[in-house]
Image (cartoon, rainbow, N blue to C red):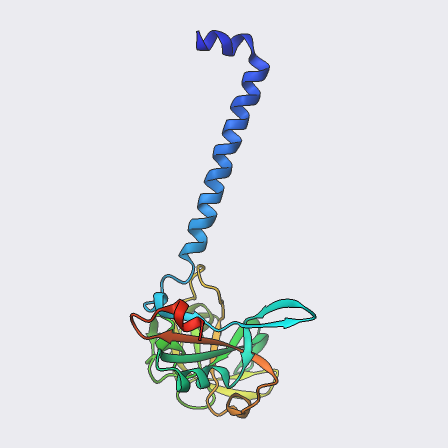
Length: 227
């Protein structure tokens, strides 16, 4: 009986079937999107405890939220709140040219980070020590893809590369796996903020840094945010 009705009302049935198929496909797309979003940054060992500081304020009656913060925010929160186990910062430098020996490479995405950055974010090291790689000024950690591009079969460790925009040289102290696709940041090089005067300034007016905190275990995040 059901098949007879379908056959007798072919046009209406086709519309219903197409509508059902589109509905199912839409649900699947939404499900895949939600699953994809939930997978972002889950590869970090401390993922459940990492929070990014977002400044919220009101301008002309409109509430605004901004993820970049002044340089003192992260260290101040670490100092003032016992709930904070670690605090680290990232400053985008953008795409730049890197020179090694007589060859210049374009489209290199670089960020400057605090020395403890790799103690907060889990980016596996192939060479070097994540605890000490960025402890000294003018040190840099690069991904394995960039290392192969710059150095070929040479051992990259302790090699010097030049940041063309500034003319500064950086010593390679670590090689890491490429940053996973499911990360909210994607950089080829991570240079140390150690020794950079602006990173130590007590300047609350300029916002250039992404500030991240690792909360102590069992910290109530909502209660902490409300402080």
